[in-house]
Image (tube, rainbow over all chains, first blue to last red; front, side, top):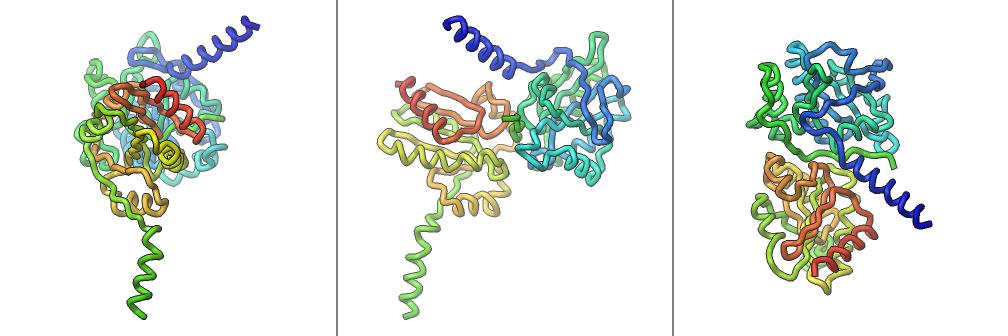
Length: 199
Length: 161
């Protein structure tokens, strides 16, 4: 009995630790296979690039909506320079019907997404990355070792007003990476919606 | 007669309006307030009108306040809505729901400057809540049902004696 309790306890502890983990800057991010809004499965390896702007985002969250145009603009600006946007919706549509796969297709079409919008149905990729909120950005740089996490955090420092942003973190990170440098600011925090984890 | 009906009307709507002012504060002012050295437990909840899980749990904080009037407990509901939405959204929301706890609006456009000062454990997702008494702090990035909130509050209370 004692052993059983200990085992259960260990399992609980281990799962808590796994939840709290996620990638840190400098880690190599594992590739994934996720369903895209064109019904095809996509991996980072399918997309020829120098690196990626991986954005955990969704349809329903007002902060994702406030940043949506900025995400579209990031792809327009940086995909030609080798850093395309890869958007991932990690929310459980049972909890938020707005974030269903069909609604993802609709939203992407309406807003003219120029990038993959992937559905993390099992939520495993969000867990691996350590994403906790939407929007939550991970800038990856391709290296010999794999896709290295170069920046984690916010898109810029003003959620309400893009024009009033003083520092555009993602743009600065990519500018540094393009010059072969490490981003000066490699981690920031921002307010966002919690990821709606399966219950 | 007309005067009487006006008085009656005022009497009728008075309890419903119980209009609360929503004070706009900078982070430093907020932090000074909840980290004061006294015998009060501060329960600071970060929320926004647009955040579904946050809105769901707001009433639980009012209930907590009501149940623990005897112990010195101060609830601060800190709205992270944009300041530009104060009159159009936040104040009507607070009054329509007759929120009893004190509501503040945080006037900071760059969350990266204050999130870590609340807690390095905070990723920025809301709801998030800090329990604070005499320098002791407990931070939780999660949503509560009432029983959980009460349990957390009581265990914080006994640990911070």
